[in-house]
Length: 222
Ligand SMILES: [Zn+2]
View 1 (cartoon, rainbow, N blue to C red):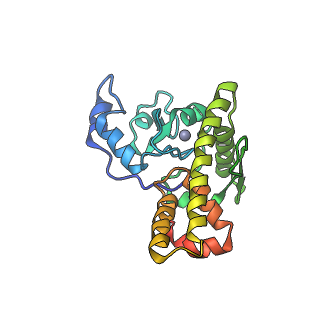
View 2 (cartoon, rainbow, N blue to C red):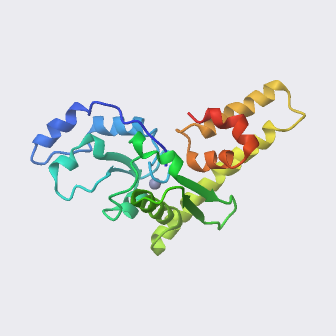
View 3 (cartoon, rainbow, N blue to C red):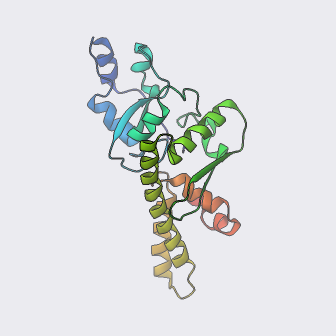
């Protein structure tokens, strides 16, 4: 999970919808703003341009109209993650709150081979971080038979992304490449490390875990 800045103020239509008896928090301007703010990525699993999109209530509203129409409580997630989270994980790290330092608290471990599972370790033992770790393990590895299949699909997409980054990194360090070729590789590596890319946390972890790669590429973590 990565930090995303939520644009302010809230879209005007949200307050209008809130006044209606059958108001909809998923009105058009809300969807557009969320899509942009979250770079069209599920904030939990980091799937890019997910085929099923849910506007998620970060804290489940359970009928509370203020929470239901609170702009700061609306997040962009895929169906799989929203269905895994439900109201069971109401106190996780908030990726739109800089103070939660979400990018320093979790480590992403995935060997890029078929049938491998994801492991998440943590650098802090507070309740929010522990809940976030539990949620991410559930999202990436599955909880029910159906969700295990969905998680498998997510890990297949993850595998392809890591493989692509790996190929560009290998190419970048190939001695026979000229400057032009090296620049082309660097552009691709930068795209992979940008927070708008799919599964950025996993890619950055690979860079963080290798001193030389970290020195070469960490300044592209923007
Ligand atoms: Zn997701």
